[in-house]
Length: 140
Image 1 (cartoon, rainbow, N blue to C red):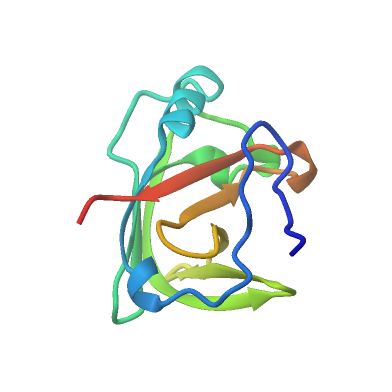
Image 2 (image 1 turned 90 degrees about the vertical axis):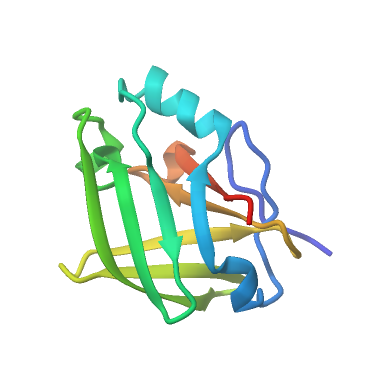
């Protein structure tokens, strides 16, 4: 079976099989490479960055680096937090998480791997730049 790979240094097989909601619900933390990128490329001081996806469809993004919302994915060394709702959706052959905040900010997170443990990734700036943040599920 062919799979789509996110360009760049990390190799993630995007999910083609609809994930179980229970496998996506929980607290997601940046992986080690993302934390390194935040420090080295973004100049961020470590914060308790996390994404919380609840079973009732509510969600929170806590202490997210501002390069996710700045044009071009540029760091201004700040953080933002937002609450809202999440859903699973299909984009072509692949599944993803859609987040819409109470401020009407819309973000998508690609889901990697055909079965758990999954990873979530968010593109920074231009998708062709191959810059993204990756999140792993916090231990339950």
